[in-house]
Image (cartoon, rainbow, N blue to C red; front, side, top):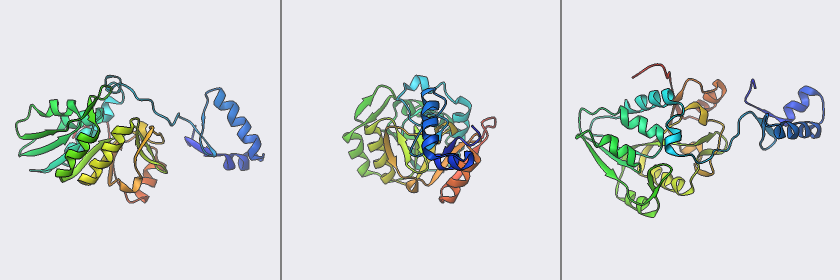
Length: 245
């Protein structure tokens, strides 16, 4: 509980017992739903994310998403051209965008397009394709092929999980494929993720951590995780969910 995760070998050394004994104990604790086993270590939270409806996700980490969205919006420059992926943190970003000049936005999210449609300074390119009912966003080859004609300064992307060894993930395979194409279209990839996403994995991998340029998260991120992200050379911005930008 103090460290969020711990290696089997470390437990064996600390308790002066064999790794076999530790594994048996961890198996019992996992059956009791006290922890989760994962590749030679025990972790406190379930690392695997279920695909949940967007309306359910909107109720989670509301203040954190609002603060992350506000900070992300502050990075947009006059006459910018940006990509916005899907997800509730992207909705928070869209609600915080205030323009003083022209802005071009390409998005897979119907909700993002709807929010930004109220601002006449924003030119919106809505990607087409197959609609994901759970996220109210499009995926598929039509969305992917459209991106071949564009080049954007930034991609803002939400994720379902960030595992520093495995990479960034989402629950949907087709969404992951579209996100990879989006990353190729943008000069810079900015991941917007509240602190609950760290140490977790969705079903489908989007990319390795080395392909991420910038992460914006909230102040509940574990200090050790924050240090490791910065050691990877990834820009890290931590926002206070009680503050507004």
